[in-house]
Amino acid sequence: MNDLALHNYFRSSTSVRVRAALNLKGLGYDYVPLSLLKGEQASADHLALNPSGLVPTLVTPQGPLPQSLAILEWLDEVHPEPPLLPTDAWGRARVRSLAHIVALDIHPVNNLRILKHLETEFGVDAAGKAAWFRRWAQAGMDALEIRLASEPETGEFCHGDVVGLADLCLYAQVLNNARFEVDMSPYPTIRRIHANSMAIPALSAAAPANQPDSV
Image 1 (cartoon, one colour):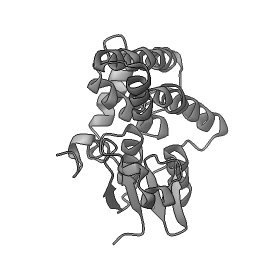
Image 2 (cartoon, one colour):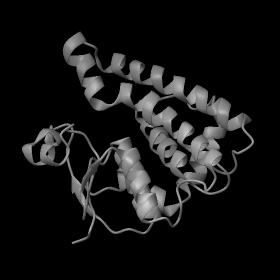
Image 3 (cartoon, rainbow, N blue to C red):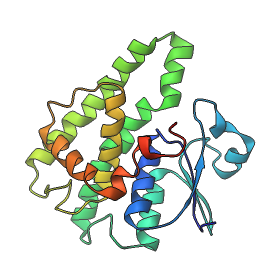
Image 4 (cartoon, rainbow, N blue to C red):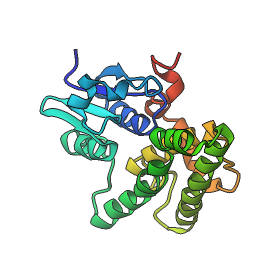
């Protein structure tokens, strides 16, 4: 048994972010699968760890820690190598700003509970849910592509030539975009960064297809 246990869902993009960070930092963890489609995130046991009933939740020696961005920053403070954030204040702010386009603009309106609500409350069918997802994913991708293509800090990755927090968020989102057939052709910079991320074993190992509950 490891000191860390990740309660997560294989296809959850927020879970992908955390798995990638744990892999990058070489941290062992117990993989605890939860099926969102079966509603296991709303079980009494999971709600005791995370009252929001969401994934991921990282159980640490200090207690359970929900929310992927908080988990990523905690991991970076407790296990600083390799770093997920730059050392300078501007760099850290820029990386967070890029990450937030994914984590705060795109993901909250496109996660499973929102898509389910569209179906159950408004009768939106699968095609309509996919169109909704693409609408908000593309809005975020548009903003990210402009910034990444124009800002001088962009390198092989979102910030310089080392993978970091923004890349983890972007990597997970692009994987999720593929499920909903988001057209990525207008985003050459994002596609280049994603390809660079896919080439890193720690990130590719975090992909949904490589998880034990993906069968």
